Image 1 (spheres, rainbow, N blue to C red):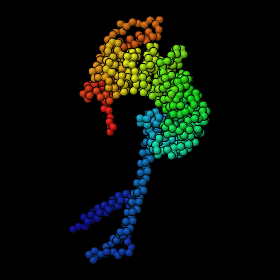
Image 2 (image 1 turned 90 degrees about the horizontal axis):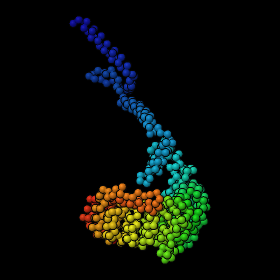
Image 3 (image 1 turned 45 degrees about the horizontal axis):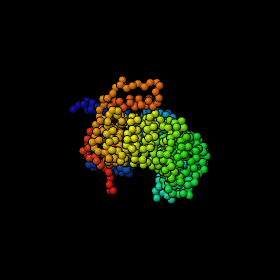
Image 4 (image 1 turned 90 degrees about the vertical axis):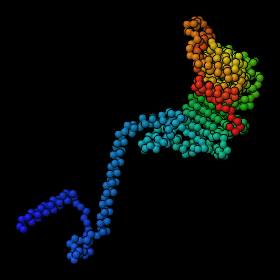
Length: 553
């Protein structure tokens, strides 16, 4: 063979090795593989191996070095990804909100929703550091201070500091439990010592304790002015005990409560100080018995100082001055309209076991032309009160809700009164034995209709009426066609008095077919069977029927 082919193959091999080395050099430096210096070269087939033997520990060390470099690079990558994610989140509109706007949203979420689904401040602070800083720098979020067995004094102290100078809503609540009786007084005193310097910016103050000594211990520390106080509530659970603490305290808040509009007092004797209960919008009194019961003249003098009163509630008031025969309206001559107490903004009155004599005295001496809700419960015979209401309805009485429970009355006079309140929407008669079949038939007779706008009827515990009268009432209110036209009614002249104007308005309202009943309650009506209830549910949207529970429910 010639030597020319061998040269070509050698040149090709050299060019291949050179290109391979060039590509390897372009990849960068490779990790050096350490060689062993102490090992002899191994022989294969009797010939010595020219390559040196590689050390295994050194190879492992090189791999560990590469792993550490990779870990460092991975940590750097993770850090860069974190910065990237933060930069992307900062572009979100929620995180770019100004702190003032975010603070307003927090306030609306915590206080604006109400008690249905409130947002907790602690939940807002757990979202992120920025939200936590905004919540801490929003004093309004810390103005609601609650003191109870479940709230520590350190929490109260933090809220007082974070609220700065914003008006406070303070609530001290201890239920009459046996496990709380030993430490309630000490806890209340310590809490009042913290709250006392902030009474000047208190907007509402609510105190609920088991007995009078604890109430006196708290209220003795309320001797500073309260120029921002709007709501005051004092509730003592055990009203028949602790006669040693029945003496009235000094004037609360030094008698300086110019903004007080709502006052609710239960079994708290304050000497009926007029400075505390004047110019009110809401007045609620409860739990006064025997010698602590206010007289009718005392309550009337209080009402004279509250011309803008909107709600009046008397509950559990009993004593000689209330139930005596001298307080009955049989011998009472109602004052003329010019001398009666004009309560033009009064829209709600509630009497719960307040004594029929006291109730008659109050209703006879006040004028309530805008009354919308009336509740009379456990007052024995309320026929005299119905006569007073009839006199008021002859001029103006836009009554919407009427509730009577465990009372007696003359059925004929009650029906005559209902004829003069066509605006009535809800009628509740609970445990009334005078609710007879004749009364239900009067409600279903036409024309003119009695209570044509009636939508809710509650006859819970009434067993004197039969099924036919109730079915006739429901069927009579299914029609929606008018029985009279507007042109058939005489138009009032400009010279008629207010009584004639009210009569024409009643005729106008009762000339049309009545409203369909929307809800009816026949709970504890033993004469109503299950089949009858099923029939009612065909024509009435909401039917309540719960059988009377026995001793073992």
